[in-house]
Image (cartoon, rainbow, N blue to C red; front, side, top):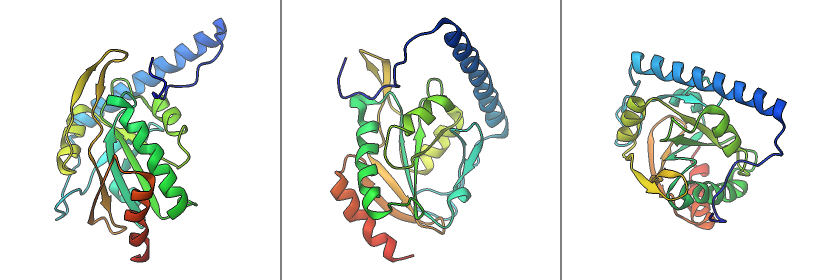
Length: 212
């Protein structure tokens, strides 16, 4: 097992606890599946709003609720795509570097909303996404959607959905090569590399905060 891969914290097994946890995960799975079916029935809410890249979207957040682009109005929004099970653990590396950059440029987390969208809704359920996001210093906002919704949203944000075989996890997803930056009014403001260092991300984001 690669030492670099971030995994959920392992706990000592207790039979009664395992039953409770199993029941909880079953309910969460049913709720997530129901959410996907509703999302598919409603159709993806995506619109460019006149942007070259990005625009309107509606996704399921890590609390089993919904989030849209409007949720983050008034803040700079960083939109990135990946998965808990990502190729070379690239999503974890990206979020680690981003967390370090945000600690410097937006320490209280009030001006920038980092939105991590999982491309793996079958495995990245709300509880898994919550636990995953808590492993990073910054307040990462995580969510996902039904396959049709993810296809529409990634297209809108000029990202792709690419799945590759993985010897440990069976399969893993590629992390999007770019993080899309949207301004507080919801307009496209550029991109930065998802493989950039914390210092490079800091240098890209710091000037933006002087604009609004």
